[in-house]
Length: 273
Image 1 (cartoon, helix red, strand yellow):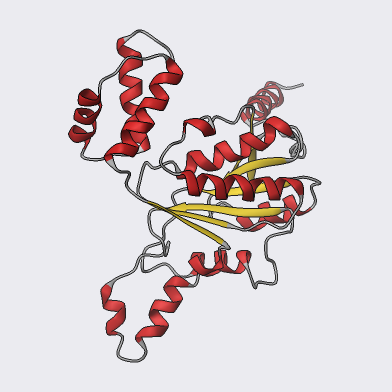
Image 2 (tube, rainbow, N blue to C red; image 1 turned 180 degrees about the vertical axis):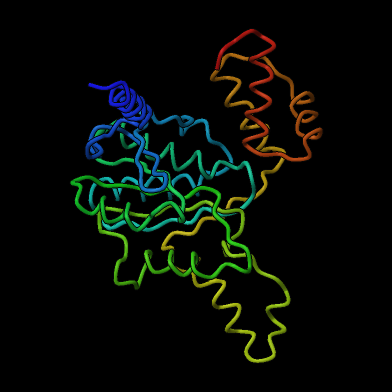
């Protein structure tokens, strides 16, 4: 073997080692959750979510989501879900908590799959169609600007009416700060041809969800109830005055702000959460 041949072999070996290891077909039956990114799946060993009993101020929404996820897990008819509204009010956390709640009783019945519309969602749906398990595909914090057209229409097609709609063992759950998901403007009503058409096209995506739940900024009483529940669960001392001052400095009252306050209390006490 010449020196040149030996050098080429060493280069080839180095390149081979630098390539990512090839993996077989993903195991869609063994994990509670997955992340789908650009056609690749990553298993999540533990689904992190708050206890349902600690989620206060959203009782009606909680009951609806928990019941719908339980139906899906059992193989019964279930809705695609749109959770929209105020930031920090537990939309994403509620979806995770509802799935984990079912998994505690029936571990293999359902899995949560987090994805984005531009991450090869069509390929994901084709793959899940062949799996003997129920799946909730989760699109978090979804929103399209007014210039978007292809992605909202593609998502509408997957939800309902398309040739390649999502399979029976899959439902979609979307969270968004906007009820219509697609950005809307008052100028839509000034369309000189047909203002109703412009508005209907913006609302068409939201209309595809059988279960649409609004989340609104919580009242002071609800905020304090959330803080009280978390504090009691973790054995933390607190005062209403301090809790309200924390919310005032952040300019909002929400479940997220309440949890941040609890994190501050736990940190001061040298306690893990």
